[in-house]
Image (cartoon, rainbow, N blue to C red):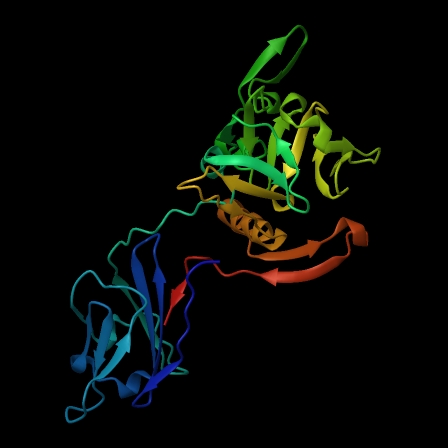
Length: 297
């Protein structure tokens, strides 16, 4: 779930901790104890710290979690946040901005657009008709985020009342057009292979495979002409290349991780309680997640 490294180091009696902050292109460096670090013998060069505790000693080389923008000699006076109790101090150094690879969720619209079929993960029965077009949905909590995007939500009037001009209804699949969320694929009834599924008379209108009776999804709560197929219940076969067919299947844990990453991104929340409805929503697991872009040394 991202790049994360730790390395407890102590060189010549000096301990250090460095953290890369990629969004603001800075590296924070904390050194302890300061009394062992002569200011005129300490220098940061690219991704290394060169440090000598006495003029006669060889330089200790400490690795930073990123690259500084230029060679930086620094002094004890620059270690602002000086703590006289434990003789520690910290300094912030400008870091080179690094291009990071864009994160793409499993079974995105692009991946599904190149696929041959969407099948039941247990028996291989084809669930969705071929020749579909797939489009990615925005964040699954996009509608709630309108409170952040608009001081006043756009509205239009109908008679004596009014409703949101941007409605959840605008994001619905259509014939031959499927919408792809973080954890599910939304299709209209006409695009499901009818002989492959059946709907159980349960409160959530569970959709199961007709062949093996495995759960494959549910009907949409607001519009029961729409089927939501859960990605972790599917196998996706790609279009054959050189007569070789590639299959893609992802476990539920992958999509739990994707949900956590999205919540972190939009709400800056890092602590979670994970529950299961089958256990009467008893908390099964408490999770604390570091930012996926923390890089430490």
